[in-house]
Length: 126
Image (spheres, rainbow, N blue to C red):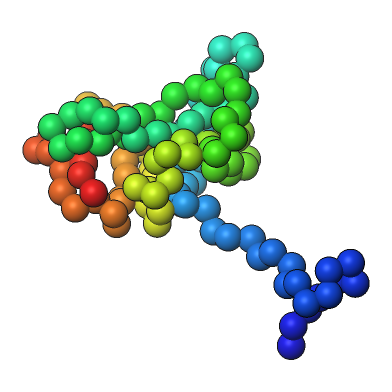
């Protein structure tokens, strides 16, 4: 059965597509903490994949002061999480987590698009 609207007969309503990146509860909690400590004027946190490192691309998480037109926007309980529009294709299906232990703390990514990474794990290739 096809659902249509009277204003646009024959046109199916748009379905919501899943987010490019799935955030774990720990990642959402970390974003909330970052937003609680954010500089004035910050509207969210953005994930991007700039070119750097041994393998070519790296994960970068930064404060956002303004929304860019092609950013993917994910609303979390702690604040808005953006994915850089140019990075989305490298990140589709990824899981972003926050891990801490006695010696390190940081965001960790399970990226099904990554074909390889450098020895230190700071950069990846697709």
